[in-house]
Image (cartoon, rainbow, N blue to C red; front, side):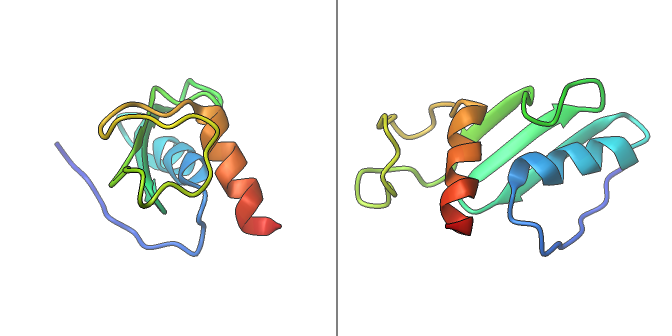
Length: 89
């Protein structure tokens, strides 16, 4: 499978994955930033990825998310948007 890894100043994994999917020959993009990895396709809207996963999530590193999830549990895209908003506050 062809792939390319790029660094970006963008911190929003939703935006990273969406942009990658638009540039991909296969229409699939992966964005990794902060504590999240996001996988999406070019056909999905930016705010509704195929999967959004919390990395290194545990009670000690939780940054005030409303719901605590066990390690390895998928995060709703809404949590990603909330975390991004906190970055810009």
